[in-house]
Amino acid sequence: MTIEQVTVIGGGILGSQIAYQTAFKGLKVVLYDINDEAMKAAKQHIKLLKADYQRDLKITDGAFEQGLEQLSYSTDLADAVKNADLVIEAIPEKIAIKQSFYESLAKVAPAKTIFASNSSTLLPSQLKDFTGRPKQYLHIHFANQIWIRNTAEVMGSPETDPEVFNQAVAFAKTIGMVPIPLKKEQPRYVLNTMLIPWLNAALILWAKGVAEPATIDKTWMIDLGVAVGPFAVLDVIGMKTHYNIVVTEAEATDNDDLRLVAKKMKERIDANKLGPTTGEGFYHWPNPEFMAPDFLMD
Image 1 (cartoon, rainbow, N blue to C red):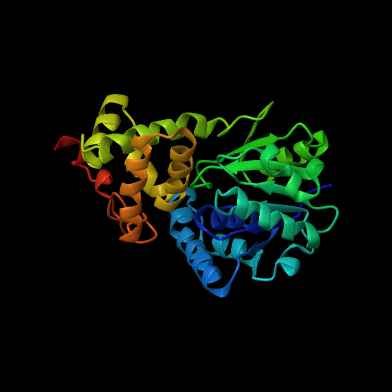
Image 2 (cartoon, helix red, strand yellow):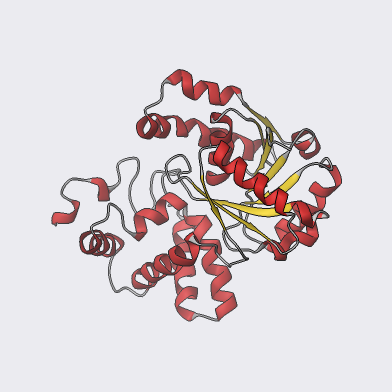
């Protein structure tokens, strides 16, 4: 089976990016979210992508509009997946939420449909039994800013059909990704196995009052010779996304430092300092301080 019709579940920051990138590369896409309010937010996320694609990919207005023409929206799950070759789920990193969703999805999706999660922390084996089709279930993990950070980590469970795995790899190539096939299940895949400890180390320095976010980023940027530091990355990822990861890890490891980080992050979430989508995170957007010419000189 060639994957030609895709349904993306969840129109948050990354879900909306996955949906638009897939449509931009010519596949038919339905973006599903739970209600009209969530869908309104998803459409706004996609609208904001135009400036990013034009800046980074040098595309025309017409090219961006062609992507939009491939994309439709639905708040009816059965309608959203009725023609889907592949469903990609991008909903919160909570097993109970995912279990409820997959049990509902299994009742309405066609028998042919491959199910995939964009989960950044959970393993296919933790969710496969909820899908009713473990052989047709795997994870495809995308990085934020999908159009330029174009890796797709493909990870199956021991029960995933090898042909389904190969179809997922081929799909990733079709939508402009570099597939990163994992030979076995690995918590946090390749990227987040390295990324999350780095982000958490920076957050602990901030939460314990050791240094300000800009100071921590400057240290990293100057000494490693790179363009961004951890707090710039956190802003792009989105405060809520990493907050959920921190809370889960704090509970699992009984780590007081991470509990403090979660508390401090929750304060920023409550103040609506979520990152580029609200105009302020650790930096002010759309012109964050770390991009100023003199940022590293002070």
